[in-house]
Length: 396
Image 1 (tube, rainbow, N blue to C red):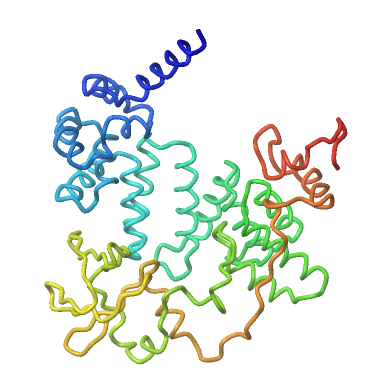
Image 2 (image 1 turned 120 degrees about the vertical axis):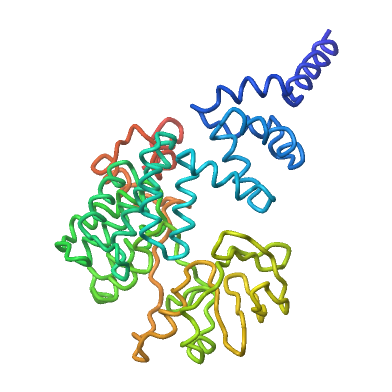
């Protein structure tokens, strides 16, 4: 009997594991516009490039299924029709596609168009709450870029406050730095900075944990407030922990010697560097076409690929060099050409990360701050670890 039941269960499991039929998928996809279920597209074969383009591309296009069109755009950007489907999703005002276009514009330092696409994405009605918060964070940081013609600090602060009120760990970390530093003419308020740092930490931001370390070292007189401000500025608009491999806050991939020698060639960048694919540089030209090139190859515009790293491509044409930086088209230039009187090198300040292990003292802090800064009925850092019991008694 047991053997029969086991075989029956296995048969049921096998049946359930079978891929969905085309008829079933078509019905589900027609109803999928309201709820973005990624597993549905996987179960229906969107991960198979041949099937995706031969079967599903005509179907989603004929029925104008925005999510299906965007799935093909996201999954196969280098396909012959990948860019076409991306543009179609944007033309249909699909929120995630508009947000993707905004990020693309931001990577090429086109803040004005980035703002347009991000705002259109927020109006689309297609975004999840988390996606809305992420875009609100990004909009805030765009407006707080002093080097941008779109600089509008009041609007930036308002947007970060809006994101922070929606449990954005990054926005709380950023506002904590601004309250501590007084940057953008914000009133300095160290008590508020401490409050916001703890809120960011409890929401899961490692960068805020490290910024809290700088805050306390300054309060203890072990470093100056200027040093604390410097440390916090390195991670003011992120939740990523400090990268130990980056020395003196130099952007990854910068070759300052080359940049300083060829300053006059740096502002004319013919392509955007998208990354490495099959050990080749994946670049996009100004009309949106993408190509891959190996070191030593010549582009259709007559540029030779002189060198490739994970973050930087060096081009040469008629004896003149150009540089493509993957992360920020101008960051290497700005860093390498700044004044020779560099600030003294500082040792990175970090504190013990709360999200890894919890001492009794850390749990006391967590239990003290959590009810004061966040809704403790929702998940937060340390909630489980600091409420574990041994023989029915609380650990801390």
